[in-house]
Length: 297
Image (cartoon, rainbow, N blue to C red; front, side, top):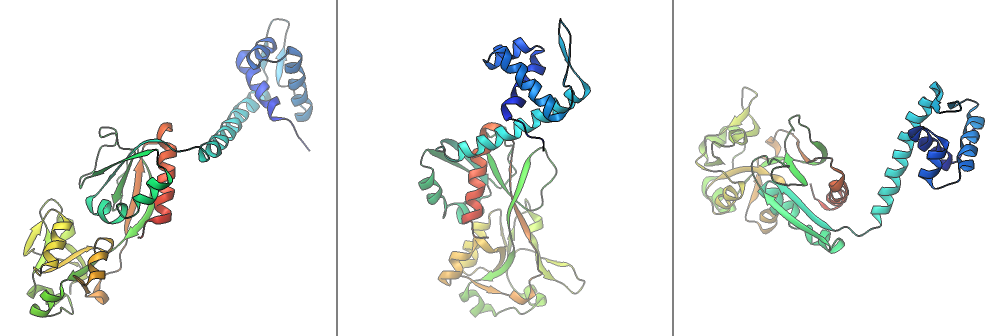
C-alpha cells in the first residue's frame, strides 16, 4: 500500500516550483536534508523518479510533472476543506446585499430575517426590492432571487424552491357576483391583471376549450401584485397570484381560493443567483442554507 505524508507533497511542490532542493528548503524553512529525504521517500513509495538531477539543476521527469499537476489540485481541495470548516466556526460579519422581487421580500424574507440577524448579529443586511432583473455588479448585490426560468448568463445559480399561482377573491365580491366554477364563468367576472410591463402574468393557469391558458383582459390593472391584492381584498374582482403572497389574507379570511380544481399544475422555480467571488462565497452559502431551513415554499 502506498502511503506518504502530506508534508512530503508540499515539499515536492515547492521543489518543483523553485527548481532546486536548496531553494525549496529556504522556502519551506527546513534543512536541505529534509527536502532530500522527503523527495526520496516519495520516489520510494511511488517506485519512480520524480526529478532528473544534474550537478547544476533539477528538472521534473514525466511522472514528476504528472504528480505535480495532481498534487497541486489535491492541496487546493484540502485547503478549501480546511477553510470551509475554519470559516464555519468563525463569526460571520460584513454586509450582505440581497436583491429580490418585492413580493418575495415582503412575504418570504421579511418574516424570517429576524432569526438570521439573531444568528449573525455582525452581518449588516441590505434588501433591494426590484421587479426588474438587477445587474449584480453594478448594484453591488451579493445574491439575487429570481422567479421563473433563468436565462443563460455568467452567474452561478442554485434552485431554492418553487411556487405556483392560483385564483383568489374576497368573500364580499363572491357574494355579490357569484362563485365561478369554470373558465367560461371568468368572462362574466372582473379580472384583476398586470399592466403591459408584465403581460405574461395575464395568462392564467386554467385551460380554455382550445387547451390554452386563459388570457384575461383586465378590468383593473397595476404593475404591482401587492396593489392587485389590495384591490381584490376590497372587492374589485378576481386575481391570480403566487400562493406565498396571499397566506396572511387567506388566514384572515380577507381572500378565499376559488377554482382550485381547475388550476393547471405548474411549478415556477425560485433561484438564487450570484457571482462566485471568493469574498462573498461564505455569506452566500450561509444565507442559502438559512433559506433552505426557514423559507416556506
